[in-house]
View 1 (cartoon, rainbow, N blue to C red):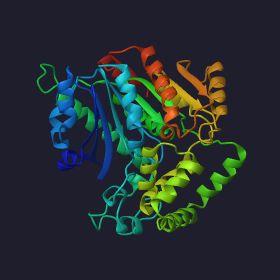
View 2 (view 1 turned 120 degrees about the horizontal axis):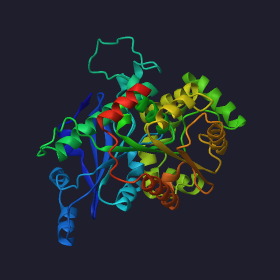
View 3 (view 1 turned 45 degrees about the vertical axis):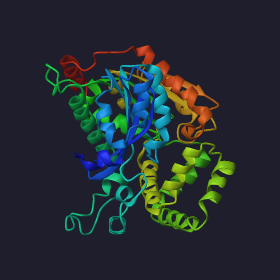
View 4 (view 1 turned 135 degrees about the horizontal axis):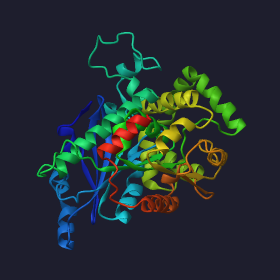
Length: 413
């Protein structure tokens, strides 16, 4: 269930406008206020129009969006964990701007991931719920939200499906209100872009919703974490941490509480000089979210479940089912990457040679990239180019959502 109301307008912020409108909003999805980002080409043709847009208030942004160009394709972005979409706004803006008119992007944070109690949950919601999202007083207090949504993979997948249903409705209202066609039946093409565990969420939601898959022209996975099989030492450490989650989660949240007594500038200096986060915006977001014990708890409870429940081997059945409908591009990085190491790409190529997974899965390895590329400005450009090349290969304006295709998808799933 998605609820929209006054929070949409009140929380919306115009981030940048040239020929692009990029804005951030909060909408309520499955009972959880969630950060989303919308990036569109606008119809402003002259510099004075653009200047007027740039100087206008956030409240006026709703009317500005009515001047957006109708896109034939929406890029749907699902981030990794921690699932805060603000990290990726600049990256997605570059992709949309360079693809040109006809493309727009929509991105979503995870339920429970962000800044503020309304997003991460309150004391009662956290203290009265076990790490599986179950409460002893289930149903007795309707004011307490369902913690299975932010704390479990299944809950996050439900959250993303509800988001997509909502943005389809929003797209129809924005661009088809005056159309002679039946707006309830027209849907844009989708290209999914995911990062890390977002790849698993995209894979699952497409298998659950053949109608969404039928409108999907292409999938781009960036350093996909859809199997847990890191190098041996990392596997040992992470597996034990995930098994002892009932102790690890409170220990880490206690450390966050302790760290919050230090001045932010000290922690910012540490993140820049010793962790290597050389993006000021990225560090600010990191400080905002990780100095909040409840946000840290949401991040860890979900992340440790990912480690416990993801399969060790690639899901070749899912790759075949999706590959029968659309192609996929996958980017792997160096460093090395414990979540999507190079040998995962080699395993997929072996499966391709043995005809176990489709040949329309294209893979690329870039040694210089890191898994957390988005907080390293110098690494954004090669990832943008990878996305652009992947999208341009399939062409634009693909008619992927016709009735025959939907019937074909349903028969294969």
